[in-house]
Image (cartoon, rainbow, N blue to C red; front, side):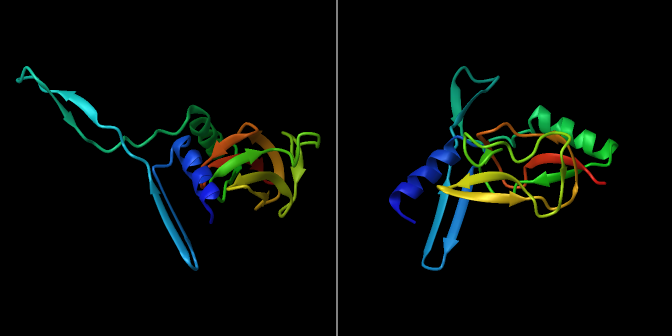
Amino acid sequence: MDLKEIQTLIKFISSSLVDEVSIEQKDFKINIKRNLPPVAAPLAAAPQQFTVSTPAPIAALPPVAEASVAVATITNTIELKSPMIGTFYRKSSPDKPVFVEVGDVIEKGQVICIIEAMKLFNEIEAEASGRVVKILVDDSQPVEYDQPLLLIEPI
């Protein structure tokens, strides 16, 4: 891993909800942690304010993800999740068609999107067959590990 790749990883982490990432290769190991800002907390009995360092609150799921979980339990859908952190792309290049649309029938092993991580473009394959009910991520948006990408209805 070279310096440019490390800088790209740091930029990605700073723009995502991830607070810490560890990468280990056979002759290289890196651990990147986000600095958490101190939080000012007023004390009722004292006229002064003190700075108290607290861990960042656990980020709540975005409303779209919460809604999709409810849909998944009601309509018997399967969530196809991201196997890595990176940037989600619906098509292989700007002039190509998208891999899948809502309503498409997909097969297990079919490429459903690309996730770019550290300048590597990884084709993500469907883990199950079914009809695409909803696409949960916009094109060119960052995704987290295990974040739902699509909802499919098994057929």
